[in-house]
Length: 210
Image 1 (cartoon, rainbow, N blue to C red):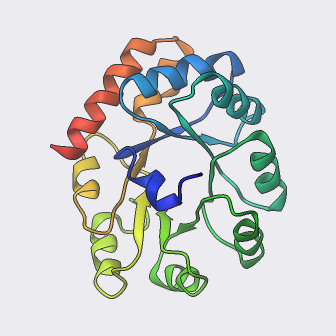
Image 2 (image 1 turned 120 degrees about the horizontal axis):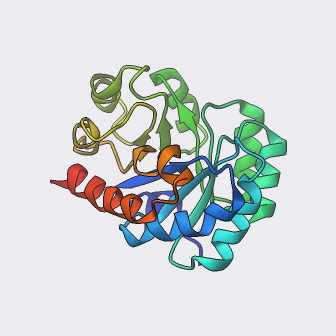
Image 3 (image 1 turned 90 degrees about the vertical axis):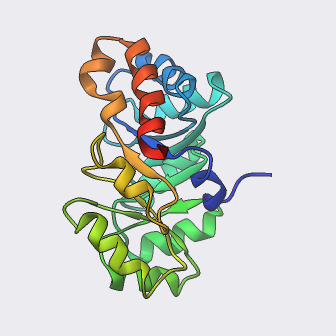
């Protein structure tokens, strides 16, 4: 039985936000992240290699839970699900996109930046959301403020989260996990420095949970 989005958010404290330009990097990158303890992977649909990367990681890295990010319309939603995405993440929300996503039954992590957007999703029964862009949208103080009147929502803050502030975010009572990309930076991937990616992944977990 497939996991709910709430269950997926509990697997790892950090979800790597992956931009893959070369499909040949997909599997070794995923293996490096999983080896470091980060098993929930968000492949952003920002590159031509993204969909094939999802397929390959699904086939060759069984310990990974592979999702698709940058879902911005029905077309990208359907393409991600066809590629085998186990969950989908959007940077924002439209009623058309959210209704279509809910019909698929695939776990959904929709993006919000303020209380009104969060309340609109809550009306549809959605209680897990991406807070994006986290730092630009008010960061830790904003999440604390939202949490007081709407405690039933669990967030995954993404956007501007790094080694210095990851613990501040993860320690919040209404944060289930955080999204970050520093452990899989383009420079490390281009250099195929998988060992460093594994090291940074393990370090990220320590920084978040210390």
